[in-house]
Image (cartoon, rainbow, N blue to C red; front, side, top):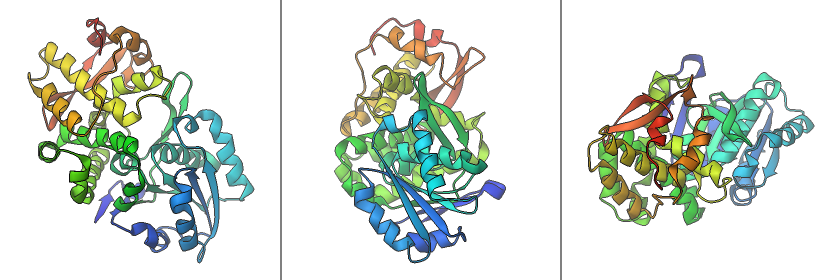
Length: 353
């Protein structure tokens, strides 16, 4: 299955296919004619797929690799010098290529390094987690975290190619499946009532596996359309942030050590929809449908914290512009909208979420 993200000179193909990892060299040769490739991965993913990728590429290219620790703490501003040093040691030039082989953390960190090293080196994303496959590898958002918050230093930098192999998901533990399912459910909520219905009609991720390539395709296609309409996140692309305003603050509150991003998004989607129902901004019963789907896939839906404890961090969120906060709410399952408000949207509720 092939999708094309049409962004003029920044256009690029996305391929979704079982076993595509073994054919990576052929696809990469279509977008890259240079000599050197740096593969950036982590210590969970590289032992599984790094050598296979290197063996496939080294027949044509000079290959180097950098293996970083897994986990959100790697996506730290302080990690960038390590990446830049590896690129310099390999003498990578602007005509060479960087591959991000991993989940969202590796994709974001490597993408930002590629965008800034020598003012921009060609990038290929090979996402190996469900979250990265359905969301973060597509669209060109790359970033690193600061102590004050997530993704506060970043850029828009489109890859030259995205290769998605659904079979690599078989090596993921349950935690990383939950992480990705948060984003899959989000796409159903904001843009695709039929996708949401498919999720409702199954009782577990195992049941869903047969339909996974098609589900990944649907999610990526939604993101492709949204990104084509709004590459730099000033309008419609904000809809992709459904649940994220609360999610980022939950992640930060627990120092990225408790809920994963997708799990925090699950809590955020349910809780913000409940708040919207209380204020008459979303039809009653919408939150219950989200809750039922979250339970089917073993996702969290509450974090047992007073809402006011979380709202301080929201003021630093990128979606907080000129003291105006754009939150994403639902007209209904499959239909979302941007609701301009202030921090008072959250502060008027002094309760646990």
